[in-house]
Structures are given as structure tokens and as C-alpha cells.
Image 1 (cartoon, rainbow, N blue to C red):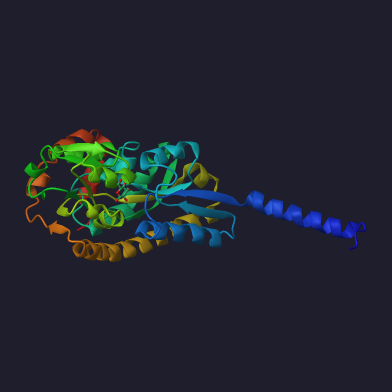
Image 2: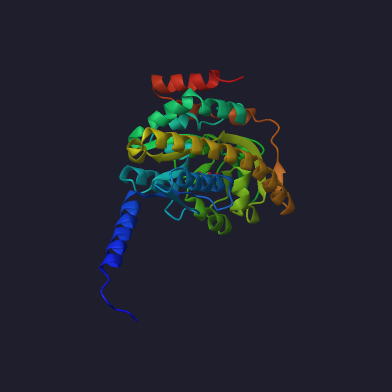
Length: 329
Ligand code: BDP
């Protein structure tokens, strides 16, 4: 082996090390929070967002998505943005509402007439107003995913009218709007982390829960709660957010890359969502879940006035609600 001193080689090595260090000092690794399993529509869309950001910025920004609530439950994750503990995430509008009341207005029971109405609201000027409302929580909403419509699933008896919910312990996400909605229908709302619902159903700590078909299916809650009653009380949008401090540090060109990539990922999510809803329905039917369509939703709609009274409390929020209701066909 030749161990002789070779200055030229050492200089070259040092130079290449310096380059590596310079490149990695520039590259920023972004941490992404996600609640769902990796093959969930929003999870696949978030992965697409992270990968495309890496490609389009030549690796200056790279993103890793931590699925399954690995970085903590939703409320905790929302709070982490204040400290830049998390750089991007997909959050439920309902969970953001405790931090930015405007987000409650798009999560209000029966506020949207259809998914098309919701997309029209979110993809336009109202979506930008909602994003501005998140600034104090150190977030910018770059695009909106769908969360379908939430309905009740129960262990013992189906829900046909609100009276069937009376006295039932129904799990809700840990946010005020969910608690108020389920209580307005007469149930005892029990806030619990998403990951605790399965065992809580199994052990009888709760009598039921409420969610869209893809979450009901992907969590396998249907193995324990076999009655799905489609009152569709909430159509809650989900925001793909990035940290505002990150956003403010981006060049105008990079902002455009982030925004366009986020919007493209929302298109992916909405397409995958529609497919997953169908797949979930098939899985539920196969597993023997009894789905109750609830032909007359009017008693559920009528019960919601206290929720509107509780959350639509300022002129600004009243205006936002009126603009949402007036928008679309
Ligand atoms: C899912 C939403 C998620 C909610 C979750 C829940 O995607 O944001 O937090 O329901 O019920 O459908 O906790």
C-alpha cells in the first residue's frame, strides 16, 4: 500500500468535502405530519407533494411524511407549528377551528350543499381568507383536500333519528366543533385521539363514533361497530398547510413551486378519495356492516341551530358564513 503524502489528492478531497457540506447546509429537510395510514388518499397525495418539492427544487427542500400520527395526535401537531416542530401537514378544518375560528365556519354541520360547493368555496377567494386566518398559528394553507361527509357508526343500535343518539357515548375528535355538533344531536360527546377509538369501542368505553367511510374502513372500526347511519352531519375540508416561517423564507419562484405542487396534490387526493369511498363501501358491505341511508335528514339539520349560535359569533364570521352560503350553484 502506498502511504506516501499526496498533497494534490488531499486538496481535492477537502474541496469535495467542502462542497458536500455547502450543499447539505443549503438543503432543508421538512417534517410532514399525517394522521392516516400510508395508502390513504391524503397520505399518497402528501407523499406526492414531498417528492415533487424535492425534484422541483433540485433537492434544496426535501420532505418526509410521518404517517399514522407518529408525530403525535392532531391537536398536539397543530400546536407544534408555533415552534416550527412540524413543517407541513394535512389538518382537519374542525381541528384548526379551535385555533382559527374562521375554520369552524367551513366545518359547520350541513354548511355545504355538496362536495362541488365545498371545492368551489375552498379553491377561490374564501380559501385565501381561511389561509390568512391561519397566520397567527404560523400556517399557510396551500391547498384543500376533501374529507367527505362524517356519519355515525354504532355498536348496538342504528341511528334513524336524533332521538336514537340520546345518552350514547360517541367519540369525537378533540376539538370544540365536533363536541358541539354531536351534543346538539343529544349524544354525550367523548373527545378521544383517533388511535384510541378501536379499543374504546371494543371495551365499551364508547357506544360509537362518527367518520367518513374511508376512515371508518381504514381504521377497521367496522370490525367492532357494525351499524353505519348516514346522517352526513359534517363535511369537513382538510388543509394542506406549511409553516408560515418556512413560507416567508421561500423565494418567489420556490413559493410558486410549493403552491403549484400543493394544488396538484389536492387534485390527486380528490381523485383517489372518490375511488377510496367506493372501495370502502365494498369492504364494509363485505364485512357485514349494515348501512342505514337516513332518508329524512331534516331532524338532524334542525337540531344544529345551537352550533351556529355558538360559533358564528362576530360580524366577520357571519359574513364568511353568508359568503359561503351565497357561493356556487
Ligand atoms: C379523519 C380526518 C382526521 C380526523 C379524524 C378523526 O381525516 O383529520 O382527525 O377523522 O376522527 O377522517 O380524528
